[in-house]
Image 1 (cartoon, helix red, strand yellow):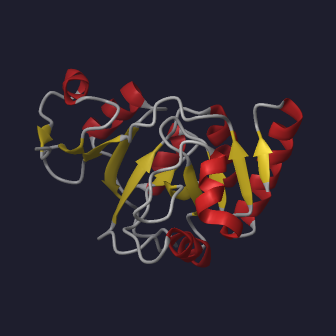
Image 2 (tube, one colour):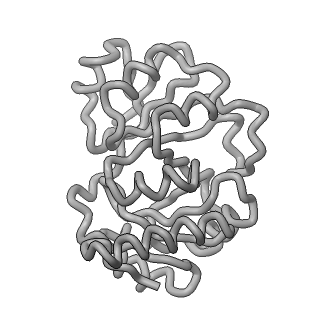
Amino acid sequence: MLYDCRSLADRDRGIAAAIEAVKNGELVVLPTDTVYGIGADAFTPYAVRALHDAKGGPQAAPPVLIGSRHTLDGLVYTLPRAARDLVEAFWPGALTIIVEHSPSLSWDLGDSSGTVAVRMPLHPVALEVLRETGPMAVSSANKTGQPAAVTAEEARDQLGYAVRAYLEAGPAPDPVPSTIVDLTGSVPVLLREGAIPLVKLRDVVADIESQVA
């Protein structure tokens, strides 16, 4: 079902429905500060598999979205100083960091070699859902090979009944993907330059290297 979160009453109903769906292992589509995402409970393996199936087959391990900076401490074994500095500067926002996750976590996101890509999005609807559900595995809300959805309605056209609740908040304000920085090595590495440019990252962490052509 699609809920128009631009209406206060529908927003409350939609957020409640999305939280219930995630807790039941179902899929939801929600807005973020980049493009719309299709999400599932990160700790429910069959829900993560359903996410892959909805998109059209095996995918890379999806990023994990969280609703609070404090949640990050519960997901990682150790957090490098560079990671803390970048999070302080750019979260919530369009920065995805790759860090080593705690080996004790009971999740199966796919073959990620003990690492996880984490982001805290700057969108009130997404944050309200995430603060109740906990970490969610979230990928762009589209079929593999199709354009990323910039509205929930576009996502519904592609994903249909595979998703329990669609949260519509209007067109994505800045449909540029997040910037990705790998912080698992001795030196931070820019893997994708998205909404946050390298020059701004280097204002915070000067020694970031770039693998972007």
